[in-house]
Length: 119
Image (cartoon, rainbow, N blue to C red; front, side, top):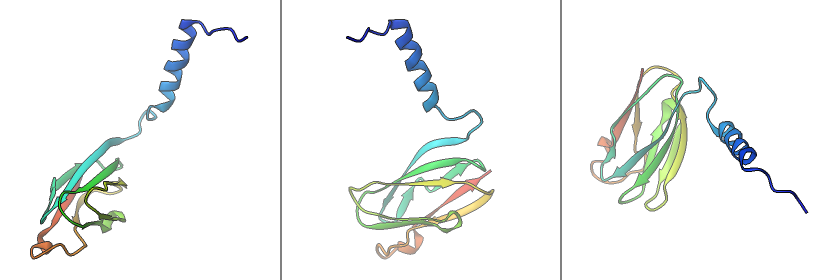
């Protein structure tokens, strides 16, 4: 029969395990940014990032099929209602970069865009 692990040792093991799951010191990441797509806009339309920062974009359509394309960062996805999409993006250089809907979604489709501002 196995001997139970003392409470102090269990707490130490849990603390060590938690430390292993934390990001490494000096790593940069803003976590998850939720972007909604709906007739004919993205929300938010401007996203600020720091150069070198890695984020996860969670894309959600509120009404119909949309596309999401940020060609300067090489990311693209179909955004289907009821099926959130997650994309990882690293802001590898500074400047302003446009993202657009690249699935025709109606008369004002050409106006459906936003931008990343990378400092």
